[in-house]
Image (cartoon, rainbow, N blue to C red; front, side):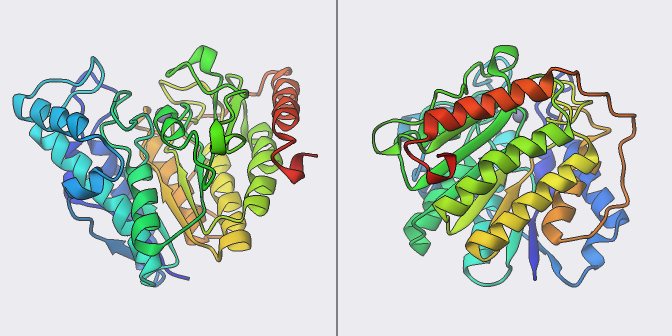
Length: 355
Ligand SMILES: [Zn+2]
């Protein structure tokens, strides 16, 4: 079993400013921890070097006008919106990260690796003709299109476990029945982008293929994993994708500064393990994991390490939480169970597993 990790030194140029929560030093910090933990000494692990995504590949998803606008903003050093700055250096890094996602998928389909981790990936707030929420290009969607158009992949499952709802990815595939989008995220009434409710189930031919599991603030490991096993596991088994793409960094951690969910480092390790087990069971292990988010620099590296260690198939990890995890409030589990029942009721007619 071989795992490829895509990384480029220039990822650190994706630094959105001194006062901005998205800092470029995350990549160096993560790579240092990976080295310290001996990840690259494992014979199964190799480093893959991404290339700049081409305009042609970006056009598989994004509108020409939108791309022109982003490239022009970069030249002029002007922000896309208040929280999403653009510059030549940021643009170069963004293009390398999309290139990383593509390289991860190609390495699997070219038979060079079995699974891959695309460091820095998961820009799920970008849609076809818009960006925002620190995102310019939707690397997950570009990867989907490369796999469909160049490798004839027919059915793909995207599991979005970022604390924020992946509105961009959801929009892109909202009426597409060949891409099953499942997102577990913090209750949109309490966090950006404010959408991603259970009743947003897709439309047209894609009705029933957009699955949202909103979770109350402070949802902890056990409840989170229970929801994952109730929704992601049976749907993946029923849908039978050819590959799973999973995105999310550390912002669902209890100490994250933007999110309010309650995952621990160990929880991320288990989450990653569940994803790997499902991929092994339904699609021969084909999996690209894209960890990019995280807004507490102390917990980001151990969480990304835990996620990656799961993909590598380690039995245990030598990193832990730097702080004691909080206790999940009493009502959270009941609320989540209610949400999952409601979701199953809404989706019953599309999925045998929910009958
Ligand atoms: Zn996020």
